[in-house]
Length: 284
Image 1 (spheres, rainbow, N blue to C red):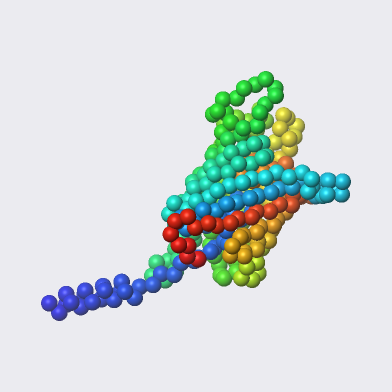
Image 2: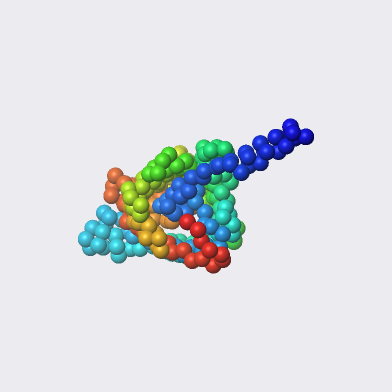
């Protein structure tokens, strides 16, 4: 009887005193710049996002260095659970509607249960609704594109986090000099300057062989890169950044980035997010 009691006491002690510490807020927001981070909304939290990308800085003073030419995306994100969220949005750029599903599969942790990275799965769909004036009517299916991403991140300390984004993009309809299927590898990072201020960067290494060179029907495209600063006021998150992508969803910045940094094709832009607790009580 005594050995059994000793075993039960050992098991109870291991359960009661076991500790697993999770890495919280690997990134300050669910977006890095254009693309997603591994973060998901908590259950019942609704986020309203307003994003702007202005024209390029090399347009000069006549167009106020791009401020006269703006595109916008408005979106809503909602946490179905603490690890599962959905979102919808609409961009003025090519009048595109989009939706996504995002699930956090693993969370970085240490202690009794050690997991070295956080892994989140992302699936998106985009619908281009821009009218054509060439007399060609496209089917609903032809207007669609899809993106799948595996978001892998690690928080290396209280200040620095990094993320890899293996990406698969499929567009149902493309020009003759474009590819329907594109593989890209994204890199992102964030450095915490203070409690409410951080620096962020984002880069998508899409192979040059998958991007048109401008000799065909499509314009010349390049790889997407952006740098920014983020301000968290606990009520709103403000992201101010510079990048060479005008589109704010995966279809555009992964495979259809028209700007080149070396030529001054740099867009100033911002994201503003505001959280609303729709269900339950939010815990940070």
